[in-house]
Amino acid sequence: QYSRSEAWSLEEGIVKSGSFNIDAGVGVRAVSGEKTAFAYSDDISLSALTDAASTVRAIAAAGQQRRQRVGTLKERRSAHSPAHSLYLPHDPLISLGAADKVRLLERLESFARAEDTRVQQVMAHLAGEYEVVLVAGSDGRLAADVRPLVRVSITVVVEDDGRREQGSAGGGGRTEYGFFTDE
Image (tube, rainbow, N blue to C red; front, top):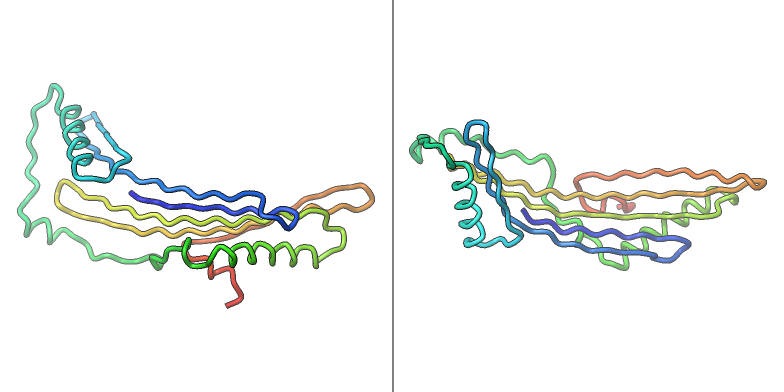
């Protein structure tokens, strides 16, 4: 599994915070009767995968002897189901440049302030993630998924005669940042 994520926050017309994160790793799970063994590493390499598999095998086999036929290659191939995509595998983090992301947040603030003169404070947030997952079964089956995810949200504080109220809204989906532009 590999993922990159970012978040941008604008308050009072200024980008107040931003973050970027990369996570990667490999995990191996074995189920033996009532036992489940799991090992992982944040290093995606053949040696890390081999070590994790050896560790899981040792944990799962402790005190038990069991064999399981996994079938011939032809049998495993016939068990595969065709892939289907639920969404496009776009990388949202590169779908807009940094300046365009800031402009999008500034535009949200402008929309909110234009709605009502009582608007006192606007906080706009933009976040995106690009995640890739590959699952390999002991029967030889492979499954993969590319998961883009974007979200935008806005919080508005209004004041009238000393009374302050706030409201929030947001949305997003498994798409790219272009979803939030006029185009």
